Length: 90
Image 1: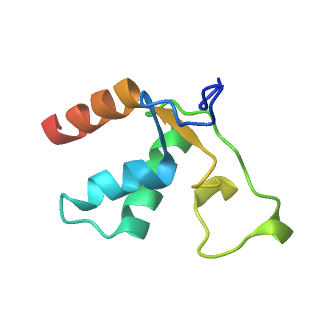
Image 2: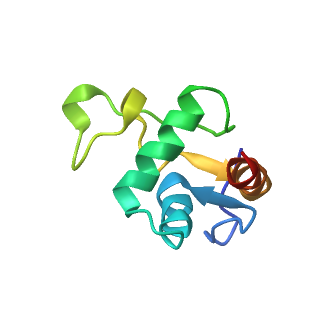
């Protein structure tokens, strides 16, 4: 899945895991706490994502479940919104 147009701009229909976490932080979660929540949902196949993983020696910063790279993992906005709605309902 391409997240960049020919001009190098991000596709508005996708979010990085970190961007999605920032949206969840508006609900009172810390950004890292939200990143962990999203990474866990991805690991449990509750949230579809184009996952990029770190090799253990590549880590910079705080770790996420499954060595998921929060900057390069992409989530379709529609998938994020559906997951967020199901989370709020349940």
